[in-house]
Length: 170
Image (cartoon, rainbow, N blue to C red):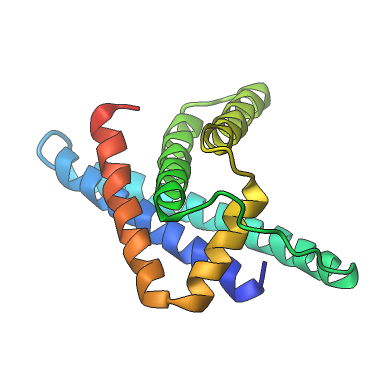
C-alpha cells in the first residue's frame, strides 16, 4: 500500500478510536471523577499513538521492502462497500476492545494470548465475508483514490457501526 494510504487509514482509525473514547468519557463522567477519567484517556491515547507510530514504522519498512520486489496486483475480489464497512468497523471495535483488555494484562504471556485472540478475531471476520486482508487493502486503496468523499462517508458509516457493536456487546 502507498505510504499516504497507510497514514490515511491509521488517521481514520485514530479518529474512530478517539470518538469512541470521547463517548466513553462522557458516559463515565457521571460515575467517576473527571481527573481520573482524563488521566486514563490520556494514557490510553498516548499508548495507542505509540502503537500506531510503531506500526507505521513497521509498515514503511515493509513498503520499502515491497518496493524492491516487483509489485503484484491484488484484485479486490468479492469486496464491496457493505463488506468494507463491516470489516473496517469490526476491526476498529476489536482494536478498542483489545486496547481495553491489554490495560488489565500484567504478564508477557497474557499480552501474547490477547494479541493472538485479536489476530484470530480479525482473520475470522475476513473469512466470514470470504475476502482476504489483501483484497480489503486493495479495495481501501481503490476507494481512496477514486472518490475520497465516498470513502469518508464509508468511514463515517463504519464509525456508526462501531457504536452499534458496542451497544450489542459483540
